[in-house]
Amino acid sequence: MSIVNKEIQELIDEKVKEAIDLKFNNWFEEKFKLLAEGRISDLESRIREKETRKKRFAVVASKGSMDMAYPPLILASTAAALDMEAAIFFTFYGLDIINRRKSAHLKVPSLANPAMPVPVPNFIGALPGMTAMATIMMKSWMNKAHVASVPDLLALCIESGVRLIGCQMTMDVMGVKKSDLIDGVEIGGAATFLDYAVEADIPMFV
Amino acid sequence: MSWVADIKLDCKGLSCPLPVIKTKKAIDGMKIGQVLEMIATDPGSMNDMAAWSHRTGQQIVEQREENGTFVFYIKKVK
Image (cartoon, rainbow over all chains, first blue to last red):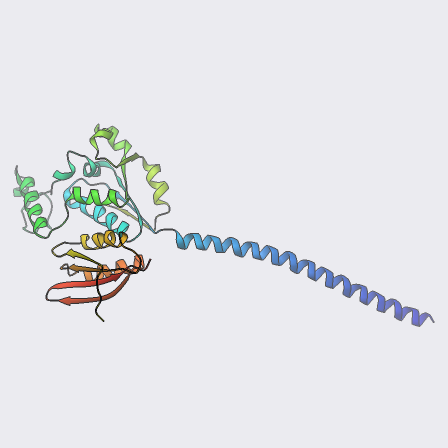
């Protein structure tokens, strides 16, 4: 009789254990599924955001000669045409590019520029009037090739939504007022630019 | 297949980046399904237009070179 009782007890224990295991497994599976689904949808939305966000181009323009004004302006206006966001940060001599009196009259240096199409020895390049001459020559070549002028490219940039940011600190140092700059520019500092550039796919310094 | 253009854009004589920028501007002003004919003389425009199409997703349905000019048919698809 006691043997039978023992067998019944064992059977009951086994069944109870099975039932608890099943319940626990179901409970665990459900919790895990919820957790995993939450993580997956979170990751999916982050991927979607990254894929749909426009590509971004951020460039610093730090030089004020004509030849150094072109690369940032051409790249930024083209970036906008390629459905990217773009911003140019004009700092130090680069501020001249957006100076309303200077932007159309940027110069090409005749000194220490061994890449001039017509090579000029440095001692001749240093003579008075040589910078003006180099500038006139470069402008005539560019006209012949129908290259857009600096003011034209600035207008294209503004029209296509490129952010033009003038450096506040440079303005203070050089005594430049907001009214000295062309319309459509904003004023900001290093933090303004970095806040934009930190999300840039293409950051650049000219 | 020869495409009939809804809009024509003459970029002959223009240098980089103007053909690309003018094309973008023209496409922005068009309706989906319309076709733009762009003619350029800048030899770089062959590569540049391909890159532009790759980035913007607009479709170059035909391009050819004829005596020194490059002719593109671009369909606005989005």
